[in-house]
Image 1 (cartoon, rainbow, N blue to C red):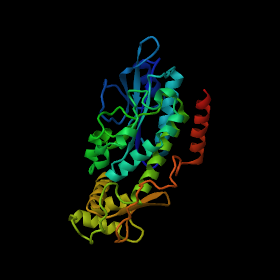
Image 2 (cartoon, rainbow, N blue to C red):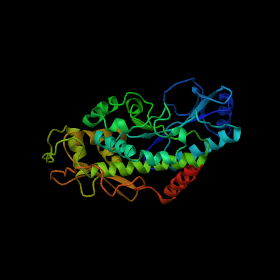
Image 3 (cartoon, rainbow, N blue to C red):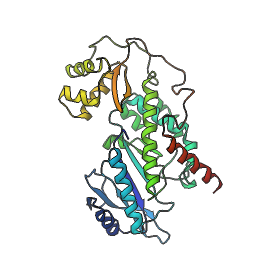
Image 4 (cartoon, helix red, strand yellow):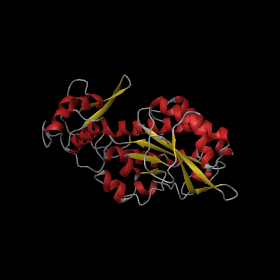
Length: 336
């Protein structure tokens, strides 16, 4: 896992009190604050009027704090197992939403993520139940028409990109960037199965990583091709210091940049974004499990007619075990 994430598990057959007790029983910190979108350091149990069992009784939602790495995956699995053991269930009205941090990405990165998800949406539909496919569910609509819209294609900033999406009720919700600096993936069906929960998080993390690799190896979408500006052009003193670090042989990690600038990691990522916006092609490579920023040579970037390479596929960059899991799931759902 390379990115921070958070999950929302919609459940039925369990009161808020019992869901609260289940998580507390396994050592989770839990807060009860009613319905709120605020980020908390504890798990939240909140009411959810959109979730109903067969008798019309309202369900609830277990919302995680910000999670990270293997410890975060373990926490997500432990919470699911506790809720399942306590007697929670799911049905067509429930969903499993996953937020993934994208605070270090620029508008081109996010466009590629959205374009790839739209391109492979039907394949993803195949390993979701019928209630989460196509445009059958009001709360997780297709994004295929969105990425074909002029507003999306012509967006030059993330704010413009967000504005191109009229509602958060899509399979991929851009609007969560405004408050949380995340992409919210809303397509997955409700579940308290630990394997399903973990596999979807891992899948999304790898899908985003591959999308970023593609985005940063090619020219920005809908942006005129220009040469990389001369060193120091249009940069503040802080940005120049960051660019100097990135320009060293082997580049620099975001942690190194943050340390040299004396800022938090999220601020260092923002500085790198500003450098890109000034016209520098800052690329990302992965070495020894770490992502490193590097400045490309001072040559004009290419402008491919199709921003997605012909060799791309849904499972590019994704662990073989996860690929097998989803291919098997799609095969079974095809005959169910």
